[in-house]
Amino acid sequence: MSRIVAITILSLLLASSSSRRDDVTAVADAFVRDVVAVGRCRRASPPPPSFAVGRRGRGRGRGGDAAAAIVPSTSSLSSTTTAAATLTEETAWRLRILLRDVATTNGRKLDNGGGMLFVVEGNFVEDEGYEPPQGRFVPIVVARDGGGGGREGGAVVVDDAGGGGGAVVGSSGTTTTTTTTTTTTLEVADSRWKLSEDPDDPKDGLWIWGLFKEPLYPYMLLQLETREVKLPSSTDGANDDSIPALKLYARVSHVRNSGGGGGDGKQSKWGWGGVELKTADLNVRVLERINLPGASVDLYEEEAVGQISFQPLS
Image (cartoon, rainbow, N blue to C red; front, side):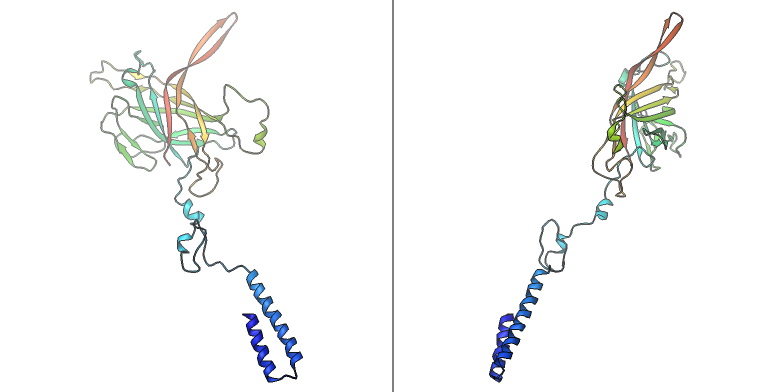
């Protein structure tokens, strides 16, 4: 097109004055060079963005399919992402404690009828400034009569295999009541948890990767101390029985899942993935004292009495 314009102007000038032909030719050549240079610059410059290209990879100009091809922003995606579970007060957990092979005060075993299942909701509260991470499990108090509850004390509602019931105040303050009215609770007097390497295979010396990234401890060592539990009995009290106070131990597999961050889109000390706690055996430690000449040695042996499982609630 630029050449056509130049030739047209040149023809007009030649027709008007043949005496200035040389000057007109020089002017026309310069004009053509300028027009061609401008055209090259326009072809080299990228077109201004008229729409965002998404999964389809192309659009149809400023109108067309532009709206259908826009990629949603990260903030809009993160608002619908479920918060990753942590071992902090930010996450409420539900613990299911199944006691089977526990001897009662009268000497009978709870394995009759499948045992007793106690359910508790609470938080793993970390003690700051310790490595490896460790702390306490703080339960939510049971609402025995459907009334208010709180985060003080340590009561656990039972949902035993025989159909026990009660009311539990959840982390959101709502109350869920079971079908029966008899409530048996397990009170947690004390608790401790600690992330750990394999206690049967401790690593000696310096773990070199710990200099570059936070170590991923494969286990949680959990200890729960309970108070005596009064079991349901007849009205005359002829068969009164109870579960004695227990000190329960569990070695729980601790996993941090990859991917799936917190709802705020930020990376916490627990990484982008959430914490997962696997089902584990519950044990009690049986003391055996061996008397030697001039001394005595206390040996502890762990016996399985049930299982514990974990479910993050928030």
